Amino acid sequence: MTRTRAARLWWLASSLAAWSCGDGAPGSVGERRALTVFAASSLTEAFHEIAPRFEARRSDVDVVLVFAGSQVLRLQIEQGAEFQVFASADLAHVRALADAGLATAPRVFAANELAVIVPPDNPARIESFGDLPRAERLVLGTAAVPVGTYARVALTRATAHYGAAFEAKVLERVVSHESNTRLVRTKVELGEADAAIVYRTDAVAAGASDAGTRVRAVPVPPSLGVRVEYAIAVAAGTADRSDAEAWVEFVLSPEGQGVLSRRGFAGPGLSPGDRS
Image (tube, rainbow, N blue to C red; front, top):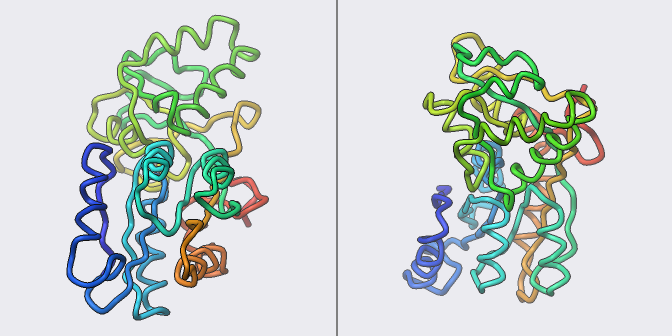
């Protein structure tokens, strides 16, 4: 059975310690081997679907999914947290771990793009990216989390289209900075924000394409968009990487890529709009 740990930094270390103190050797779940996968929070729905499919093929493996902002997971790994696979929404985080000898060379396995989401009733009347200054309550990811970094890049680029003051006007409307994209999305779903900048896959996960759903999606113009590359790597220095490497290959397989595509991701080398 796939197990999930919430992505809160303050208890993540204690959760990892608890896994290693259970019955049997560290890294085991009963008589099954535990495969601990650290993953960006934007991968939650996709990896929850991929995990049982992977376990069906490797019946002696129990996938343990740990979700958080990519920067939080990288910090935990640098501080000694045990993991076997790391999937990040920012290639730079995986490269840094590889350069430090903590992970193998990264492989890009998916792509994403930004979107604006608003509540279904759209109280601020935001119909385009250029309408963002109308928001009274805007939510972004922190500058340290990939979705926040990408959002700020888009806002800076937007000044060429909407005027030099556009970025400053939008940032004045920010009432909350969140540590991962799911928390950003939740603010809009709960009616606590007039708009937020998230990933396209967040809009898909919230059912933004269906009538009567929790959010509406407003596209980011292609000229402002940022290609978001997701990278995956295996922990370095472990004697047996077979389960971890099998997970990576499964994510890159047609079946794994099919799950990601249905969740709104594009494959390596493609933009989300390029999918057939």
